[in-house]
Every structure is written in structure tokens, then in C-alpha cells.
Image (cartoon, rainbow, N blue to C red; front, side):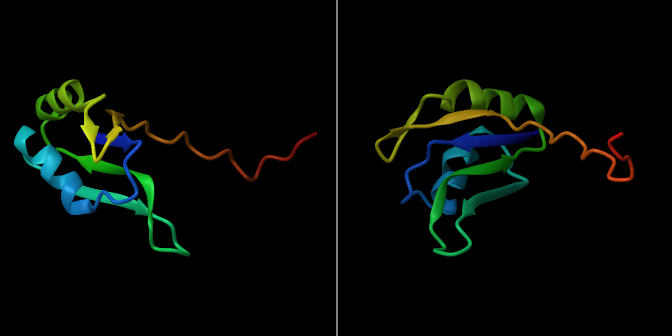
Length: 91
């Protein structure tokens, strides 16, 4: 299950994020989203956990948890909607 972690302090690192979720189970991937121009954190990231139960436990315990002075938000990441068919013309 892929989780979205928001409201992270800009100083929070990918290693910090991984360490926060590791007690809940195996982590498939951990990615902090960085600004392409500055290389600084945008304040959110994604965690993927292979076991749904572990991911749900992490959401329940960490949503609202304070990390580096900020109350983080953790939820299941939404799957983006498919892009509209570009071959269809407006009439």
C-alpha cells in the first residue's frame, strides 16, 4: 500500500521518514519529494509498504504525530485518474 505523508518539516530527511515507518513493518520504498531547482524538500513524501495491515497500523499511529515540531498527516495515497483521451475533439 502506498502512503502519502504531508506537512513534513523541510529539514526532515528521507532517512528520518524511513526510520519513522520501519517499526510498523517492511518498507518497499521511501521517497521524499524534492524541489527540482533547489533540491530542498517540498514537505511531503511517499512510503510503500507491502503489507496492507502494516500500512494501516502506520496510518492509525502516525497521522497527527509530531515530527520535527510539525504535526504530520498520513493517509493512503490516491491513484491518479487516467488522463483524458487526447484523440477526442470538443465539438
